[in-house]
Amino acid sequence: MDFLATKYPILALTGPRQSGKTTFLRTQFPGYTYVNLENLDKRRYALTDPNGFLEEYKNKVIFDEVQRVPELFSYLQTKVDEDKVMGQYIISGSQNFHLMHNITQSLAGRVAMFKLLPFDIQEMQNANWLDNDYAVNLQKGFYPAIYDRTVPAKSFYSNYIQTYVERDLSELIQVKDLKQFRNFISLCASRVGQLLNLNSLANECGISQPTAKSWISVLETSYIVYQLQPYYANFNKRVTKSSKLYFYDTGLLCFLLKINDALGVKLSAHKGSLFENYAINEFLKQNYHQNLLIDFWFWRDAVGHEVDLIWQNNEKLNLVEIKATQTIMPDMFKGLSYFEKLSPQIIQSKTLIHTGLFNENRTAGKVLSWKENPFKPDLKELL
Image (cartoon, rainbow, N blue to C red; front, side, top):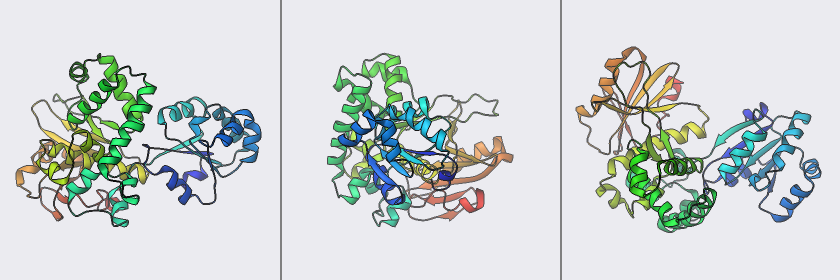
């Protein structure tokens, strides 16, 4: 963020509720004045006298919960255009749908966007919060309150669902049947790592396909779920063009699946999908937190050959296989090897991520522990 503060007048930080955005901004930008627009007096000041408000807070200011004063965005546009000061304002908010709507309406071209997701592996290790059992971390999830306030995971996610997901999102899309909406989210959890079939999801939930599409969109905007798109460039063979569905946090995912401890993760029929979700999340977190601007895909053809994750840099592809096992067998590389044979000239690396604690360099590809920052071994070599 520091670098782009010299290139854009406004920086915007988004991400899920409770991911630590306020703490991050207040600690990482001590030279900025912090203004929380949840404060009724500050909000009233901004609403009734926006010019006076921005004259008082005219440089190096953080406006938190800025979506509470949507009228302010037009005044911010005028202010930064006149002042031409880079890094003049940082804005953030917990209602991402409203925040993004106002940014695109009034501040397009003036804002550098950043995302802050729950803790990544590096942050967990630095704080000495990472357990050596992958399933412990996967089930607890990675939201800051679970660790810095020692809130039990089950209690945290129960309140998270009630206060943020059900209240905020159901109001946003005007859900008439709250039970149906919660059932929809649980059905999404049961389909994690699978190809997204909106018709099937809608039928099982008892809603229309357009409604299911709308609800998925809102869950995406609110950083509950995301879709991983398929890679299908330059292939003649028939490949899938459906996306796959994942959750931004595995703790919330486990709560929705009623998995209450690490043993439950290991015994779950969803074990493979849960670990796959965890591993892909780590790539996303590092990408956003380091602002690497990397694109991610998966690949699957009509007869079942598959690569769990593909990422690209310098026109080269890096292939990733994800296996919820500590025992590495040669046939686990078959999806990577098959893809490599289709287009060997564009393959840069092949990696298998597993639940053990060891790393190896095999002929078929690199074997990487779940505990490793997935970009750490590759950044100097590849980027």
